[in-house]
Length: 314
Image (cartoon, rainbow, N blue to C red; front, side):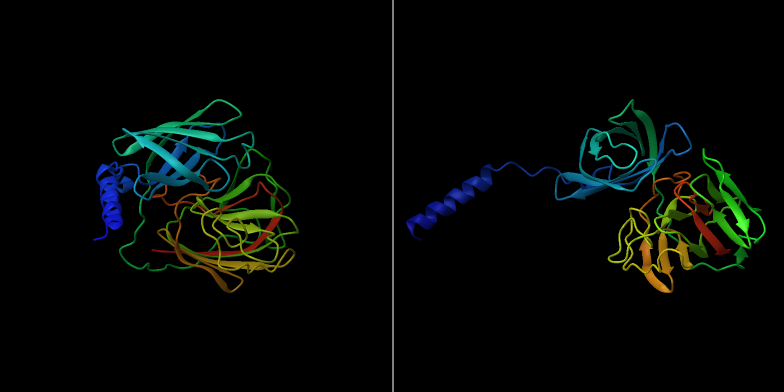
């Protein structure tokens, strides 16, 4: 073997032998997974969510949902001896600066604080999110009309603002931003048909089980957005923007079984058999294993609904 090649081989071998051992694979870290959080914050918005994943051999990354807003990416989670820490960028209600999340594991639960740049920290606690796997295909029951066309029977309002909801000529109308509207009945797996209409620039949403928002928004024509119409807000982007635009009646046909979701917007399948990772901002709670209501967002802007029909699984 030529002398230069021999020296090069020996040099590389020496580097390899003297290189530090790789860090332990974080794929086995107890923190990895999805966590449903309860945040001890004022007001009714207390639900949060955390996902932790491994990236490469030694780094943890993830996503975080606070009380409102969408899932925010977490570029690095420092985790050692059961304690962890990360920062998330500001979004809608915390524009003053980054937020810091500090936590610790206790058995199969987590707890800690979230510190906002604008004020004192809030404490939080979390439990592992259920998988919501179903062992068999659903057997559908009889369809149920959730609107009687006369009044708000079967619904209740939530929120700090005054209710702007009314029923006029068979149409449920939210005149302007105010309270949200929630069914008194809770559901597990279901098929949901809902027709809606919004004016230019308005925004609303349909929350499934009160936890997962399918966005209603005057999204401009063009490419779909992860926070635009047809999306699961901040989690799942539709494969196309199938909106008809403001002033037009539109329709969602939504099927939710466990976490598996299909969304048909105006006759076009924009989400097909996708797993919802976790709650969206503004969720009523983070108890993902429990049944929940249909929740119509009313705190953003005017919107109209009609022909809301749900077919629950037996």
